[in-house]
Length: 235
Ligand code: 5RP
Image 1 (cartoon, helix red, strand yellow):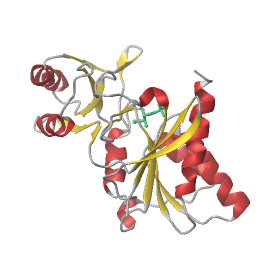
Image 2 (cartoon, rainbow, N blue to C red; image 1 turned 120 degrees about the vertical axis):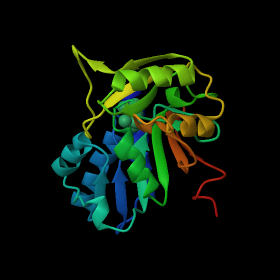
Image 3 (cartoon, rainbow, N blue to C red; image 1 turned 180 degrees about the horizontal axis):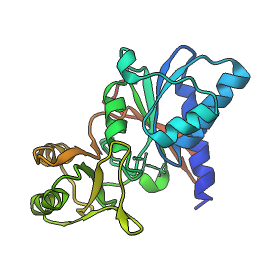
């Protein structure tokens, strides 16, 4: 495979074609969409594009500020025109696993408020059935071990609190991430999402169902934009 970093950059930049001056833009989190954020900054400073952004994480907020994207609070505006974000996996129905960067809660809130969602990815993210990538689930620190046990029983698989060195990873919202090692067998992501959300200690799950309108995918043969036939970019 061509250099993965180069593929990420190609996809990240190409996705900017969906952004027009005047738009309110959700800014995703991760090593692919970071190239989108940098390119949007360039379009603002060099080509006079006028947009405002809503970042999905503190790290994206920092990057967006550094490249000169004006930011607004989601609470202060009435929805977003578009969000561009990365994904850990997507399946043929354009259902996603996200949260590898622990930003899934803010990412889902921003996606929910957006009229369109574009995913930027390299070809390693395309799967037939979701779940080879451990499913990220944001959980409350309170009673997290009990929540992990409940998740493990529900999903019948190993579930681990995500660690960074000796301590747990804390999200931007002060919560923890439980990674569920389901294996590639999430054949009904909507049912899976809904069951997981019934557990009280769960804040949000990284299954993004019926949200993605297009994937800008970088592969060995260049970048292709794949439209979701059931998405909002189809007339
Ligand atoms: C962060 C995410 C990321 O978008 C996802 O992990 C993909 O990241 P990358 O582009 O670095 O592979 O969901 O919570």
